[in-house]
Length: 439
Image (cartoon, rainbow, N blue to C red):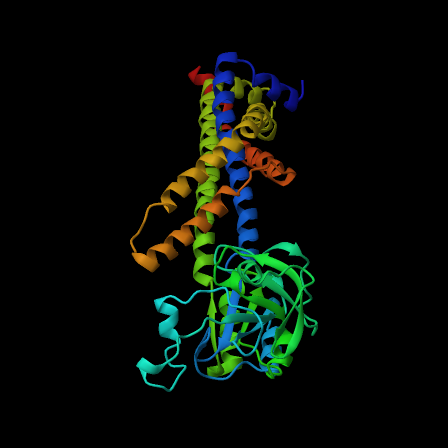
């Protein structure tokens, strides 16, 4: 009988002990597979978040915010510099303007409350008591990407018609739903703006009252009809990964200097990724812990077996058995136990991987929901960040890939090798004469 067959048969010499060892190994290996699945799924989500969340960098003219402040708009050269910056995947440029009562035949759909009236109190040089009542204005947004115009937490949705080509210079527009209702506009209707006739291509809705009271037109169109050739009041640059946001911001600040204000969502991205990375770290710790536990189980089992079979080992050596053959027999026995445990454990791991991943995610989501302070605007921003983090967490899906399965099998073999290393050393030190004399 050769070494391999003898070692395999010896693994089942004591069914009760073999069953206990296999059960403990199965639990360890099942936990290893579950943790590998959780870590792989979370890492996949981390890569997705890095490619999508917090990758926007906003560049605006220095000193300008909305329709307030001073300064000069960005130029074509500055926009070109932004576009060519390393790691910027795409850009969306906009030019914002307002239609006065003499610029259009449209009736503004916004009603001026006390805040709106105060913002327009400087529009007349007459004494306060003699000033005419301020009138609301309609916002015009020229953009290279109409679909990028959205308010926080909402997106642009067309309720009628089709979108426009932001790279064209056609006299076309998308009209906000509130403004369209106020002026009885539908797709195909026209209106005047800055002395030009503009055709309605679509009606949009964002859920934001201010934006739903405005117009969206191609950037070049707004630049032409407002006599602001090449002017841009905002550029939103999308970075290829949140890992590169800080580097992109530093490059833009160096290139544009004090001519532009640059902001990013790096903090939001970091918070989103941090919550996921903590799960990945916890899963990795679980893999390491379960691997150590499995190796210790095999180690203790084989040490006990070697001690029980000292006389048998001594006899085999006495009749000519070499250390390598005896060690090979016990390594085969350990490997057999590990393989049987792996078969059962991998089955358990496949079943438990989904619930295990969900359990880790729920635990992390509960931690993320614990408030750390903040009031009013800070509290709203904090809740918004939590919503994004929890969205990222709940979108993690577990899946057992071939790579994960192979990794689990490799760890199983590692457990067998580590678990049989010390017993092999004991075997090599056993001397037949001493064993037979004591027996």
